[in-house]
Length: 158
Image (spheres, rainbow, N blue to C red):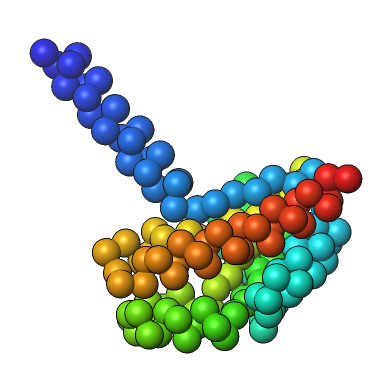
């Protein structure tokens, strides 16, 4: 009986991990961050998602390396950058459907580099909009952002 309980507990834990990770869409690019960043940026803008802020997260936190000691960059990431972007039409559509879902505006992606390769991370708007009247708009936003990043990944793989 104890073995069955441990098995069920482990199974529930695995489902939670899988459910949690499905809220983030991930693209892997076999190029460095600088190269990937430029192509992804251009693809977003070409698809009417205008980048309004570009924080260099790794650059900002690197000043704390000495202070944080062994807690600094345990995963040995070589770079962390983000793009904050918006599409005015979508912002209006979200605000019309459910003003509280303006928490999605602006949108953002995070790019990380490890071992010379880049991962693009995007919190799925549909994960945030569950149960909201803005769900249909969130689905459309998610599809259009994915389309833009897919195009960038395709360009980078050629």
